[in-house]
Image 1 (cartoon, rainbow, N blue to C red):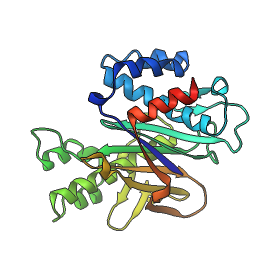
Image 2 (image 1 turned 180 degrees about the horizontal axis):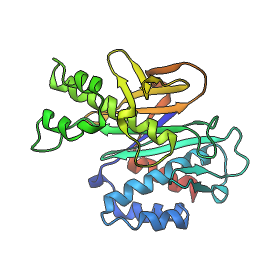
Image 3 (image 1 turned 135 degrees about the vertical axis):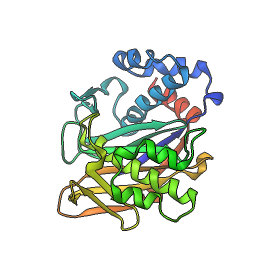
Image 4 (image 1 turned 120 degrees about the horizontal axis):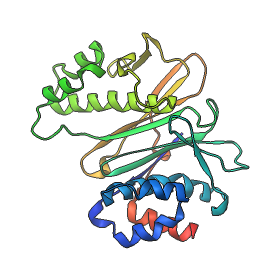
Length: 259
């Protein structure tokens, strides 16, 4: 599994670049992108749509042969013919980062069981950390709350919270079931490095942790994939599997390669 990250700053991303890149995606994607009222949200969506297309183009697929569909719950997947092995991917974003996890499509077709989430290490303005945790209290297990509110520095507590949250998000995105999953069903013990679902080990799952300190304020994330078997794997995403691009350079490259 690999994760590509595009670092996006609205102040550095010219409107002309957005307009030039929009025709690179199909009409369905364009219609979705242009519904956003805020241009920065439209740009994030555009970059998210470009990520799998650039990957397929890099693998030698002609631009006009690249096609996608979505499951009933809205999870996109690749329908481009002749991709062997199949491509599994998932895209997410939070503020200044748009991320895509991808790998071979092994289990759970057609969208395959892969998910990713990334979030900025911060608490909402005018909130204390304890108040912030209280807001999401219903989505955390007792063990998770104990670990987050333990006698550690606030910086460590915030980091623990977002490790827990991004793993939960990545897992549910990999399932592809949409909204409504009770986050308390999945528990991530960040001290013991153990993941359970409904009280049982998350057998067959691979969880890869990553962080992006080069983004200024740190971002952390998890990629999740169901690979089968009886074990559960939780580890750091290796350095060679984590790639970061500047948004302007990435989109200019997409225009050059896909036009």
